[in-house]
Figure 1 (cartoon, rainbow, N blue to C red):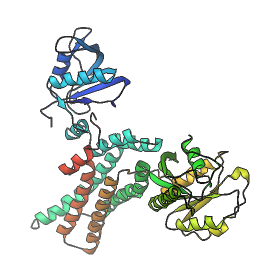
Figure 2: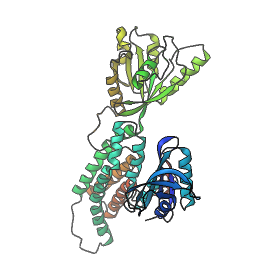
Figure 3: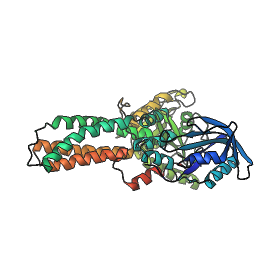
Figure 4: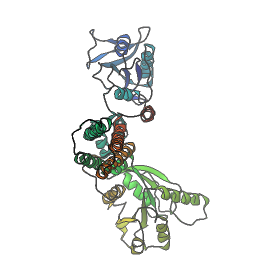
Amino acid sequence: MLYADTIAALATPPGVGGVGIIRVSGPQSLAIAQALIKPRRKGVWRSYQMRYGHVLDEHGQIVDEVLAVFFKGPRSFTGEDILEIHCHGGPLPLRRTLTLALAHGARLANPGEFSLRAFANGRIDLVQAEATLDVIEAQTNLGLSLALDQLGGGLSRDLRTLREQLMYPLAYVTALTDFPEDDVPSEELQQPLQQAQSLLSQLLAGADQGVVVREGARAALVGRPNAGKSSLMNALLRTERAIVTAIPGTTRDTLEETANLGGIPVVLIDTAGITETDDVVERIGVERSRAALSKADLVLLLIDGSQPLSPEDLAIAQLTHERPTIVIATKADLGQHADLTALTQTHPKLRGSIAISSQAGTGLDYLGTMVAEQLLGGLPLSDARLVTNPRHREALRRANAALEQAIQGLREGRPVDLIAIDLHEAIASLGEITGETVEHDLLNMIFSRFCIGK
């Protein structure tokens, strides 16, 4: 389906840069190119051929020196005719060029409207559309790799295979229901349904891992003052982000930054040292530390390993008992004098302990591995394709539940019309992922997250 109107927008981030791109999509794209741009060399506009020239205003005055390329639909990103104008990356030439495109028949695109048109015109499915945003927002190489796999249609192919495996059983039980008087040949359905469930289970097996890789997690660094929290944060970030001094209580508030730990984007929360204090500001910082601890997916409990374990350390450890926790003995370069036995043997959610030195860099790589494995449920990343989108995960869970109902119904000899309902629900849930059975409100919600120009 082709839209009747033409849209235009800035396709590169606003601000000053070397190059800025104006993107136009719709039936008026070629006419706008002919009206706006005077090529250096005469000739017709050919698809996929870059042309050099100038953008001219309504008075024939030069607005900018540009390169422009025309893509003839349907062999374009949106499936429509597309024009891209590569301007100098200053706000003024870009704004004037976009204004001229709008004056010649285009309207300003809504957020995500180019990708929405690509989906509506069958150039991409909904998985690939969402993967486009994931590629843009990827924070780690692993997250980027997974997004590119989905953008290339990896997950879509698995979902098509699943749908095909379910369509014949659905057609068969529907025939039994709609034509009971006909002699429909008997078919064995358990095996094809179990094959479909096997593939569905493989996709679900890595879904929780995939969501963590895509969305990241939060890890709170807690401990008493001067335990080395800020030093560790700086070491993991590889930059001097937090102020570090020998004075206890330097950190008065929570500080958040994202680090790549084992391929997972982890929001590290540097907290104020938890201690009893009469200082009003420091007391507020301690309260915020407790709040950050309660909301963290993982707690990194820091103990000054160069000193004996103190009652204050044990008291802080008590506060972490509700959260998965890794105990970190810091300052390993100064020698280890803290005996962590009393702490590690009694912690109900201990996920490991490690000695590190932020100053010397000792143990930091292994700590990153420990954090990643814990956030991934204690399991290494699967070799199977990972589902990274929470919406996809929930739809797969509904499909799996419906398929289990169908398989159980076959075993128990339930009426075939009930089995048909279960199979139809499973297929519809899969269709929600690719966009085959998606509602308009869901489309608006998904594409509204995109930036204008994409």
